[in-house]
Length: 170
Image: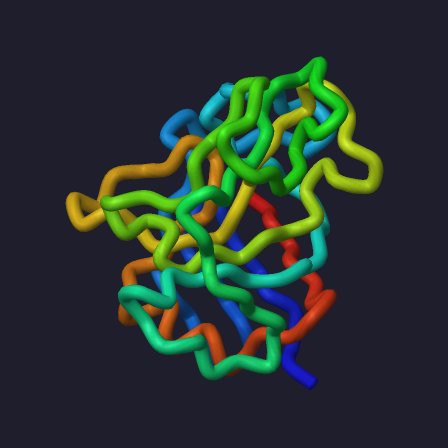
């Protein structure tokens, strides 16, 4: 079984077993996971579990990984409305409350890894949609997620498995 994923925010490095991969974090830095807030653009420090992965089947083959992956659909979304019962949950669009579309044209969610951040149960306002995903081509920082260049994500995928621990630290 693979080792835990360790992400050092201040070093911009994701480690998993022998892999040491550069990564991007939130544009406003990082914050203790219990102190984060919806929309703060900070990566939440803490210990999480990988839940599952999503991928754009129209662009990529199913990732070769022990982690469970399912293809994204054009109507997939993630609720970020703090007062909605589906807050920080996967939803189908159209959806009446505020949400993020997971089907994106910019490639960021061509591969998307869902972590257990604020999901058991979700606490309103603590933050939603904290994923590990593909970095933007211009190398910009994220809105709180962890992002890897596409070639780095490909290296990571074979090392992933269900409920793998993700440690995000300074």
